[in-house]
Image 1 (cartoon, rainbow, N blue to C red):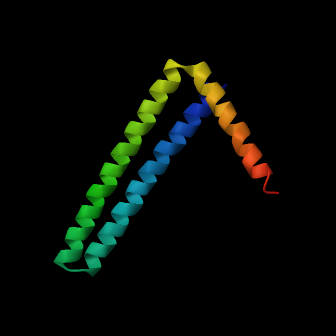
Image 2: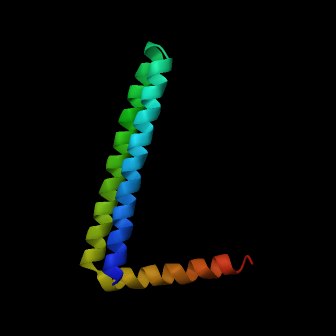
Length: 94
């Protein structure tokens, strides 16, 4: 059951990365239409940086998936501990 929830979270993260890439591409395209050569160059550079960031994020997700698959019990215990800690931190503010 925990594996299915984790798979859903990874799928959501991948979808978010895809939407971020699309949004940045749309912004770069809009900026390119309104500006001259310098703006077009900056928009192209922004697109390259966005692609690099997305690749880095995807690599991180892949590494995390591999680590969780290799040590599922340890991963579950760490996630549980982090949840308890966060609930204590958030709960103490009320």
